[in-house]
Image (cartoon, rainbow, N blue to C red; front, side, top):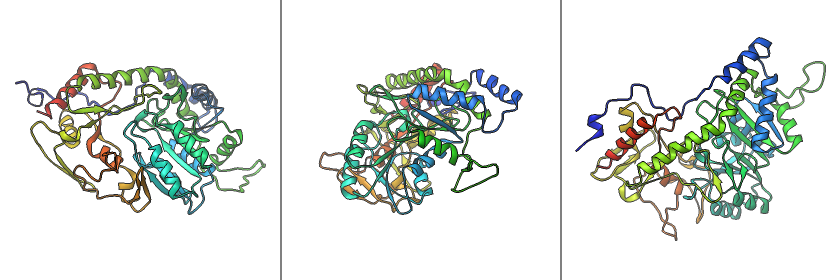
Length: 422
């Protein structure tokens, strides 16, 4: 019997999870910034990039910043978060979604995930408002480029008088019911980090339809200088503006956004088709209402096909078993052949930094359960795990999703995954 783990040699060039894909126009705009000597935080590249993003996203105003985190920070500040204020936040996400709340002295309360999209569970959010009716801000992320049920989340927030900060860092170009993500909240953020769907090596963007908010962000992001002939400061500012050089890179990437999305979708579909006979499924999305940007292709192993896996704070152990596998075994196997995958984002309520914060599931609230999670866990009335984010983290993984990965390389990765279940 052919065993790929015994017969394959490692990829000569590493297959990355997601790396920048450059086209050439980027260098032209960077060169133009150099030749005109506009290298700092003003210039044609910034102005044109803001226009292009507004046009694509369908928002009124865009402000180019140094990172998506900077955009989220200023969005949280605009949302009026003050020291001691509780803020509802997506639980299964990168901590950059949550940290800006703490920058302003807020206290994150984490909302559990739902299986349909791997994003914030509207039912848990509704429960959270019953528990904490004083909350007036919600930070909601779209995971791995897949839109959450943002219309339901918005309806709940509107009824409770809460402001939405939309973290669309991973989902630029994705849409929900025909509307681009990054436009559902009062204040929104996208990212151009090196691994995103388009990149500037760094950088991000604040999006809004509120002209006053956009002007505030422009001021705050350039150290909050007042309109005076000297450096006059009346409020706290930040060094958050994007440089004209970085804007040139992103400007050169913008015409290729749809091309990148198409390539990412093809990768997702090849995994879906190649793994369909295994006891696994791909990261889900609402096909009737949403169009992801397919930034990362992920998979989750059926509970009955999980071998024993135990995770501590920084270490993990697993016990191989015929016909079964686990994320750790698969990630270690593809790594041997020079391909990069990743675990699913570890939920925020499981992180040492935040494990004492509030955490709300659709059937109640509680503290984080032990990080040494093996399988199963408490079940709700519907027979599903109470802690959905922990369950997805336990059984899920991110697959190599680099646009430059060839079909042949992806087919070999699929064979390696299949071999883990032999």
